[in-house]
Length: 359
Image (cartoon, rainbow, N blue to C red):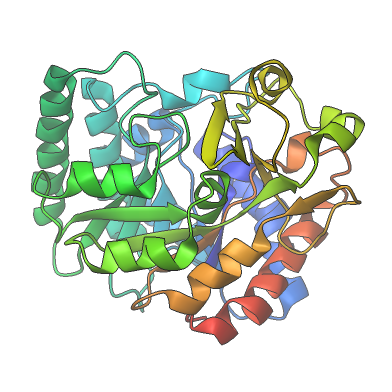
């Protein structure tokens, strides 16, 4: 099942979530002509806590999902809250995995997902942040984070027959910046039966990593791909010729890390406005701005859907697939959200399922 991630919607209470599922997810399902629609739920920490503390509330919420033909296989537990605040930027990485609030939130999500999990799901997945923003970080922090992961694993073991698996999502600029960083940190430090990777294909593309080599490295490790976030980055072949076009994407809410491949190295900037000052501007840029899968922006801009297709073609097994374009509200020309989500899911069905991803 391919799901779409509901972190595109701003609601941070149960009533608001249900109202937005009614407003967006239900008409998306109807537009697609599908009996069931997968939704990758984002629940803010207060919502997750309230549902975890109240079995009856979980039952009612499950009935609201069922009544709309919505199936849950995965949760996105990366943003803790305030994901649609006027300015998010680095706040999305807090609390870190060294802070007790992060483990508590994730355990709440485990409890909730256990009761919401679709009947035909072989497992449930929860994606989470790559420990923290890269600095400050110490060996002591490594130890604290590993202890926190073990707390979550203990909670998962107590959930029942169908396993819940935690999926760590590498992101440029974070402690686990690349897939290689994540493999190095996770291997030997966590239980691979319960903790694996969330492979975000926008993040992978921004890092200029080779998809085939990345999949090979994962296959040779003890770490599984638990979840794939089907996403595309913004690609600029000649940044000097695209300054005006890129300016429309330098918005204030989210962090848009930029990487440049030039001189045989990958050069880094932490946000798009800084890239003009800090990068050589001699090679192609990739920008961490999740672009709609089905749309190609006007030249000189492009997207990295080729990376997504390459990953889909080589995926082992059947990890959960979540279309995660959370940036609709900050796109220069967003258009109709129901139509956009439906078109992305149609694109994913046509371009990913044929490559080996299960519908």
